[in-house]
Length: 94
Image (tube, rainbow, N blue to C red; front, top):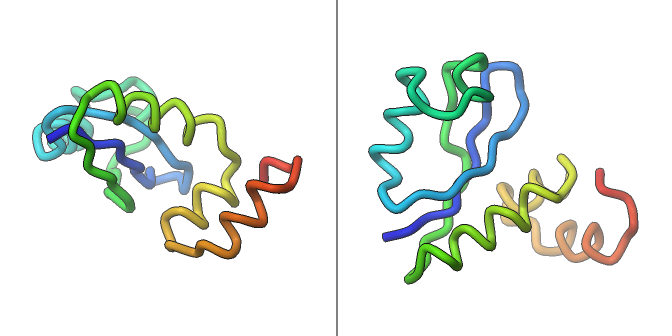
């Protein structure tokens, strides 16, 4: 199944991606065969994932979350709907 996922990198930053095979993609990130961003920030930890029926939907969600600030990503990871709603209404990205 397609997934949108968020990794926490060794430097504390977040990486947002999408894939058809989450297990394989995580292994690629951990081995240094993933994105250049995570290659320099290993090890990485999966902190959030959403499953979709269509790859296009996972990719669209990836692009949406990539445009969010750190605070909004952390609210999503924590399943903090109140903070997510507040941050969505505000103009500040963090």
